[in-house]
Amino acid sequence: MSPDASPDRPPSVDRLARALADTGLPHPLLVDAARTAVAEAMADGDPASAADRARSHAEATARALLTDVVNGTGVLLHTNLGRAPWPPPAGGQDGGHRYATLEFNLDTGDRGSRQDRAPALLARACGAEAALVVNNCASAVLLVLAALASGRGVAVSRGELVEIGGGFRIPEVMAQSGARLVEVGTTNRTRATDFASAVGDPAADVVLALAVHRSNYRIEGFTESPTTAELAALGVPLVSDIGSGLLDAACPWLDDGPPRWLDGEPAARQVLEDGAGLVTFSGDKLLGGPQAGVIAGQADLVEACAAHPLARALRPGSLVLHALQDLALAYLAREGSTIPFWQMATAPVDGLRARAERIAPNLAADTVAVPGGGTLPGVEIPSAGLIMAGDRVAELRAGPTPVVARVADDATVVDLRTVHPDDDDVVAAALAALDPAPVPTGSVPTG
Image 1 (cartoon, rainbow, N blue to C red):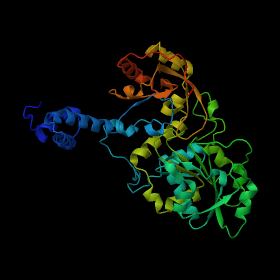
Image 2: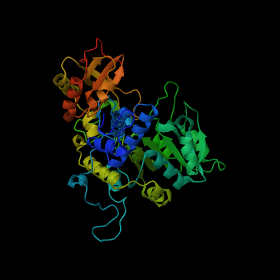
Image 3: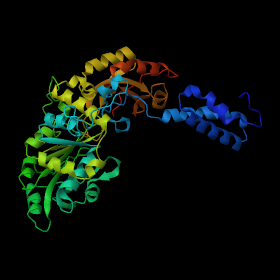
């Protein structure tokens, strides 16, 4: 019981708040926790419990803040964990006290454009004439449609009217842009002639063709889709939303070339080479950077997007652009080994097995990772990690540095493909803290 507490009176809010200083939270948040605790304690007729309640509230507040975690799920682009991992920009290594040349030209001393650096580098990396960066891929599609087709028709295959994460649907994005949806073909079969008919119909007033990569689902069986080259020959600009953000199908930044699990994934360079006027894609998926949306392609089309009023509302800040600049420089230098996503995605299974044996030999086993983030549905990547009987995920999340694992077939899996080697000791400590000690499962989980 706190010194100034009594069976009938809880400690003062100020005293409770000061006693919670070790949580590291600012004093106003500690006052909130103390006030809530006192109110609850009095309502329950238990004033003496106020101190314990206040600490519980403060600790819950601290845990609810954004924090680093170890991703042991085996999902490389885990949407709930921020998708692709990316370190702070190089400019932040000086303690964060310096400014950045966000819209400043060092040569002239005049105002510059935030789109002159990272976007230009990304354009160079994917073979585009120009590029523009906004805050996510949905924004990129919205801006393109608003800038190039407001009040006009946009032809889209019925099989590509997808819903992306968070419930956003292509028809709804198009409606918000002011463009008019012109559906062509059928769900499973759409031909170039279907697009051509729409483009040639004066009543449809089609000024753009939109191709949307079905990144998070597949249509199998009796299917047909036009090629990029066929759509590019329609006489109106083709906008290809490739979504996942693979820059080049050849993966020149990887010593061993593209991994087999990327087969069939559309890439910006090849789509543009096949005639698309613009491509749009995410920054935090296969590109491997921070959340952003990229519009790349013909300079006149990119400029039209940049000139639209929505471009200002959707523009990113210096932290995102600086991170994208570092990322683009790594791609241009063909240094895939410095990009965290590609480090993890291409790590040899033998090395993952060796790490698992060092962490906990009795739990080491082969596992299966996935790309995640709505990319490459159904694709599995051989991996290795630690597998234990039962559901221990909540306990692993409870440590000083939470370890996020997955459950499959009544077993807990910590997949090391998504764990940086520097965090192996964190995983080992989390396992050692489990009570009772983890035991191996009798079989390897199937998913």
